[in-house]
Length: 390
Image: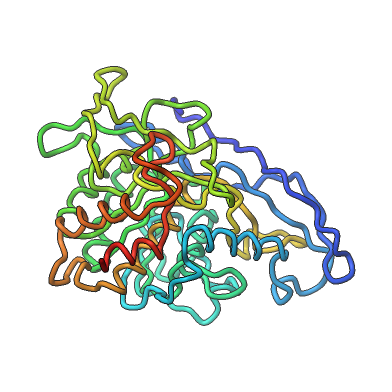
C-alpha cells in the first residue's frame, strides 16, 4: 500500500444459525472498522491486520449473558485442539506479555474482574484503558480473555500500550516508543499484530526506528512476535517488518483444518538485491515465517462501545494479526513452565531466544522442513513443551 491510501477490507461471509428457539441470528453485510493502517515518517507501512470480519446480529434480549454463537465456541475448540492447547495445563501465570495496538476495552464481559498489569497511552495520554478502534481489544482477547471466549494464556500479567489512533493510524516512532516502554516495564513477550515495509540495514542499525527498538528488545532477552502480513494473494515479495527481523518470531495464518490461509504472506528466504530493500539469504531456524497459527475465521471480542444495538460483542476475523496474538500467548505458556528462559531468568537473554526458535521449528506440526508460505509448520503448545523439556 502506498501514498497513504486507506484500507477497505471486505466483510467475510458467514453461515446462518438455524436454532431460532433459543437464539436467532441474522447475517449482516455491514463492514467493521477494525482495520490498522500505520503511517511512518520514513515509510508507508502496509496493513497487516484483520483482513476480514464477520458480525452476527442478535434477535433476543441480554446478548452478553447468552454468549456468542455456539459455532464460535466450536471454532475456538477446533483451534485449541490443532495447536495442542487442550492438552496443556499452563495458563501463563507469572509471565508478562505486552500488546502494542489500539488499546483495550476492559468493560467487555470476557474481561470481567480483570486488571491490567500496566497501561500506557501514547496517543491521547489517558490514564484509564480504552479502545476507540477495536483491533487491540480483539488481539488482547485472544491472549487474555477468560469468559465465553478463552484466551491462550488467560493468567498472564498483561501490559497494553495504545500506539494507534481511533483511525487505526500511527507513526513508526510512536510504535518504537511503545516497544521501548514494554521493555522498560519488564515484560517477557511483546505482541505486534502489525507490520510493513522493512528499513535499510547498515551494519548494526536500521533506518527504521521500530526495527531498532525491536532489536534492542531482543538483545535484552524479550521475545518479540510479529505478523507475517496479509498479502499472500498479492505477494509483495517478503513478510512484513518487524517480522522480517532475524530473531523476531514471524507468524503466518492457518484455518481450522490446518490448511494455510491463502492471504498469509510468504517469506523470501533466498535473498534478493531488487526490489529494494535488499534481503540477505536466511538460514534455520530464522527462515520466514517461522510458524503458523489460527488466522482464518478466528473468534474475537468486539469493544462494547463499538457494538451497535442489535449486535453481539463477538465476531470472527481473518488475518495474521490473530495468529500473532495466539503465538504470543503460547510462548507465555512455555515461559511459565520454564521461567529460567524469561528475560531476567538464569538462562534468559538472546541465547534463550535462539533456543526457543529452534524448539518452535522442531515442534511445529503439519510440515516437513521449511516452506516460504507455511513456515516450519503449525504452532503446537503441547509439542513445544515436550521438546523444551527433552
